[in-house]
Length: 205
Ligand code: ADP
Ligand code: 5GP
Image (cartoon, rainbow, N blue to C red; front, top):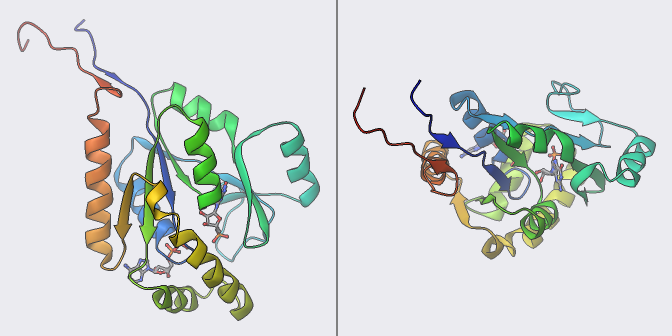
């Protein structure tokens, strides 16, 4: 048998303000690129309609969340818009060990924590074309009440100040263009020699 190329998994951090389009872009990437797996976070917030426990999030009580923190089960965790969110360490490590690419849709506090501790990662900030556009999109999404939307908009301004901490930024104005840019980043990052060690044979057969 021919020796095989070696591919190492990529830890892809996607971050940005609520309503910027992270979920939409991540969903597309997961649908189109079978090498990616989604890191299903733990959260104490209530499920939205259409959200499935164990698919979109692991929805847990405050008590269960505190237990996971005490057990050091999180790669990172943060309080975002008044709720707790955390990335489970074990599934991420297992998927990476199997050579899969792992996608984290997390806020900027969590992203900065992962950047401080992970050996290798790719970080992408998804920005809106304007802060006001976030209000329009969150209203259109119709998953959060007016107070929650205001809270998310206020947090957005702080998140936007952290763009410079990321390796890449995408302005999600036209969705098609934004997705093409995300794909371009992923395509290039897969070819890094730190992740891809090709085995070049003497002959083609
Ligand atoms: P996030 O995950 O960052 O909070 P979502 O992916 O849920 O954001 O997107 C928020 C809303 O904006 C959704 O209703 C989505 O369909 C819409 N949306 C996403 N990208 C665009 C875009 N480029 N133009 C207009 N609406 C968009
Ligand atoms: P939502 O409540 O809209 O699903 O998510 C709110 C924010 O929490 C988003 O910015 C999302 O990226 C972030 N988030 C989701 N999961 C995690 C996580 O595990 N850790 C951190 N730090 N943020 C998360």
